[in-house]
Image (cartoon, rainbow, N blue to C red; front, side, top):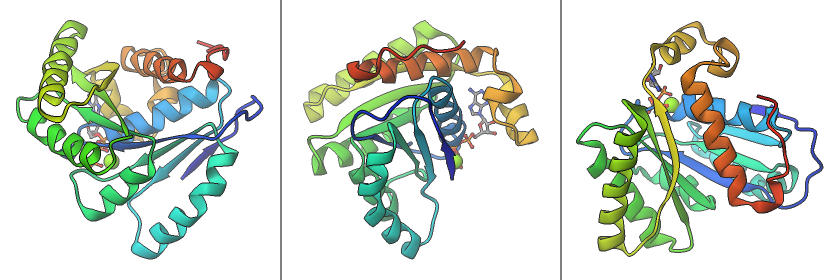
Length: 215
Ligand SMILES: Nc1ncnc2c1ncn2[C@@H]1O[C@H](COP(=O)(O)OP(=O)(O)OP(=O)(O)O)[C@@H](O)[C@H]1O
Ligand SMILES: [Mg+2]
């Protein structure tokens, strides 16, 4: 669990994101961690929660969430992959489910299952997409539009595109060295993309757009 104190005064309730994916190993943890660092460097109060916890801790955490919401600007819940009961529980606590997708052909079906469960059970929930390990920006946008079209047609839901992150071995190097990418290679291309995504998230809440990124 990482707590990063920002410099800004808290103005409203935290926006809670559940970071999920259809299948494992698509970059949830790397994105959750570095997105949290990017936002906290911009002066926001960010709480990152690893939802890979036992039943008792999860129950305790759910009770505490209300208090936590008043102390932070952003809360990211790094859930496991798939749609197990535990993951779904955390997803329903969020304002937005952030689905991380890669560009493999199977990614569609996996991500669709998650969006379907989330939007059927909690229609008020926003759904956002981040494409990770992308070959190029155009390709990612094309994948998103195709995915959006399907979700739109079959679930009647609009989804948000937050951006894409290129595939780059610097990400795995940082993971291997157990150093956050934001620190290991703060100027790398994937980190620049993550900062861009952080800016997009800030833009969603216009009360927080005045914050200036230091890089
Ligand atoms: N943009 C990227 N470019 C290259 N490698 C990446 C990228 N993003 C993630 N990876 C690599 O993919 C692997 C999985 O990443 P990560 O652990 O963040 O995924 P995860 O979705 O949290 O996995 P799990 O489902 O097991 O929790 C890591 O070794 C990481 O280095
Ligand atoms: Mg993970």
